[in-house]
Image (cartoon, rainbow, N blue to C red; front, side):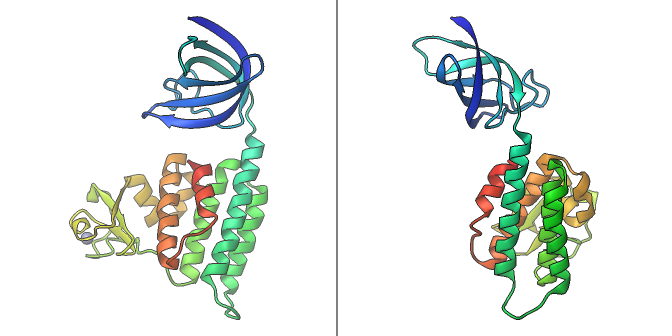
Length: 247
Ligand SMILES: [Zn+2]
């Protein structure tokens, strides 16, 4: 087994186990290769977090001739393409907003407040730093749901009306209950999904979204897209790309 040094462009990423990734690189001197990056999904790994598609970097990897997958031992990115990914996410959020505006409203039925929210959201997409795009998207989703009278019930349990607090211990969201559901009621709702306390707190108090961790934002966004799909009774064409980009 020999260690090889090369420069590569990450062309495919697959999550492997809780902490690792299988990555395909197009390298300069070895051509296309597949490697496992052990522990790369842990924030404190030597890779400093998951490696994303289209990242370019200097790499060290081991590869046995008869094995399909090598092992990535070092990766130092020289091009992160953050701006490209930010633009891609912003562009897809704009398409998603347009599709929602089309599906949530009827002809000649004005919603001036929603118009102002949509205008402000599109302007923010253009100007905000990458880590604020998803929080702004979630705020816009809350706005469109509220302005069209379909906001989820998140003040307390949508079923027994018990007030929301930290004493719930377990938190659920049910699409048929149209909101948060407490531990005593969850068994009645077959479609419920367990959510993290942080995710539930964001649904309860949407202003918390601006300071939430990316993993919490992804959880909340997943729930909201599924909820919106349920309200509209149809899938949104632009939603799968959003889910892919925020993963
Ligand atoms: Zn309840």
